Amino acid sequence: MTEDTNLLMDSLDSSKAQEQPAIASDTDEAATEAAETSPGEQEGAQGVRLVFLGEEIELPLKEAARWAQKGMNAEHALDKYKNAPEQELIGFYSALFGMERGEFLDSLTKDMLKAQTELELARLKESNPDMPNHLRLHAARLGAERRLKEYEEAQRGKRAAEEANKLHPWKALAEKYPELVSQSELPEEVQKEIDGGRTPLEAMLGYELKKANSELERLKAALEVAQTNGKNHFRTTGSAASFGGDTIKDPFLLGITGE
Image 1 (tube, rainbow, N blue to C red):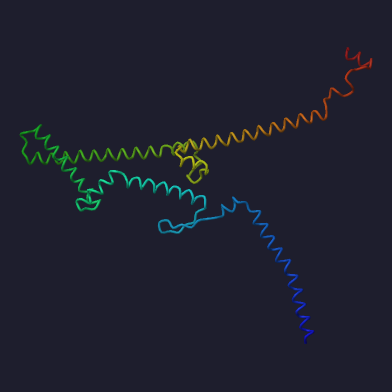
Image 2: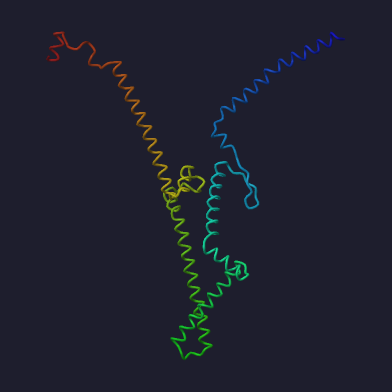
């Protein structure tokens, strides 16, 4: 019985010894595959899961970093807006009158209409002193509403012009590069230049100029190498004029050549 047990243990040990090289081989193959994967491919394969408007999405790491930068810029702009002096005044006076900010702004709008109506009423009294009071008051209200409407339209036009000015640089880029259909298609270097304050077209042209200069330097280097190799080859083989000696000494050949 002991002899059979020893034989069984020996057979198990030999089986384990045969399996170990296979395991080591699999480990080596996995390590080789990991080493062959470039850092760029590993980074591109990584993703970030986010929740946007209640929906879970996954973005590549580079894209997520770009949107994170945009979010930081927007947060900075929002803080700047909240801390603006006019916002502090609105907050102060709305609290002073015991009103919410929106309610206080509505009251200011009504006060604007009231103040404009009083101005119109004063003008009408001066220009039409014989006009009945009820007609003068009605005309003043209509005039105040018209002027405030004109003011609001002018403000909307101003905001539209400002928005158009913001879009103009991107329109210039789209006209120059119609193949670009999304900002996400811009090279990372170009996006960094835009974030730094350059216009999209300036950033893209600068990027292409840099690429062109780099290619030119590469071609110059290749040409210099080719010229150097050509000179070395010429020195090694010699010229065709050196074949047969420096001068012609045969009389027959001298007569043909006229020398």
